[in-house]
Image 1 (cartoon, helix red, strand yellow):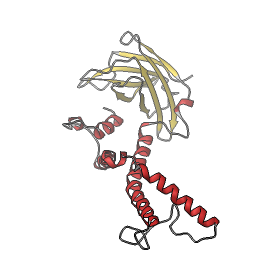
Image 2 (cartoon, rainbow, N blue to C red):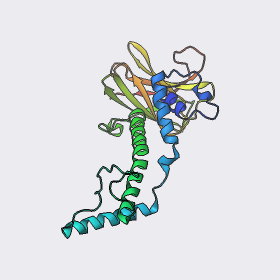
Image 3 (cartoon, rainbow, N blue to C red):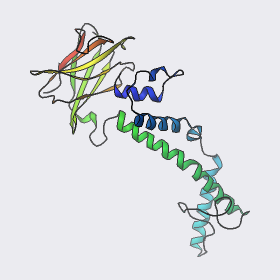
Image 4 (tube, rainbow, N blue to C red):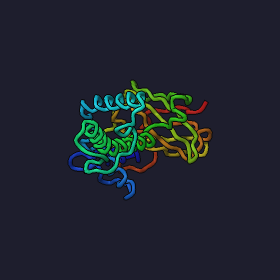
Amino acid sequence: MSRHDEWAAHLDPGVDGSMDDGMTLDATERAALDRIRSNLADPTVWEEPPPSLRGRLLAEAQTQVQDQAAGLPGQTPGIGTVITGGADGVDGPAGSDQDAVSRARAKARARWIGPLTAVAAAVVVFGLVFWPRADNPVSELPTYELAASALAPDATATVRSEPMGAGVEIWARFSGLAPAAPGEYYAGWLMGEAGMVSIGSFHARTDGAPVGLWSGVAVQDYPQMIITLQREGEPPGPSDAIVFEGRIVP
């Protein structure tokens, strides 16, 4: 199971939590993923705001604009003003329509800002972990096709690689590849004159989903890539069951 698979499994471990067995996540990773899972599970995050709130806010804004045009002092805080004081979080006497609108706005803001901020943070975390960087999208990188063997005659594979500070990020997309059976998995390898280097493993249970692999060596020195079908419990080297192979440099 790859690192990405472990993160995904910890976020959605199933009813009995058995997918957590055998993971190598440390305490810091588990705590961060637990916080993300808790925020996403909060039903208030996904609730719609009251239908009447938009109308009340627009009416308040229109009133303020009219008062300012007439040279009258504002009676309520403007949009974006921090509201403090009072039993309901609003300064001034209670009971007027304007106060009711301001209190509703303050409560709505307090209710939505926290959960939405948490969800936004979770989205950023997932974007950094599971998708290519936005400043250099993987779609702009050169694409190389791997040739399928008789083990997957109708499947296709495309590969893109990008040198990074700590190694080479490799993104592969497989179409028509059968998911690895229980007890089996797919593994990626780079080959060159100096030998062979592992670049990660995956199970391909979602057809067409991008697979993130990683190389600690330059692809120019190890230009040949192969994908093998491995069986759990067997030696960690590449098996003879080659599913795809091809060059990933010009």
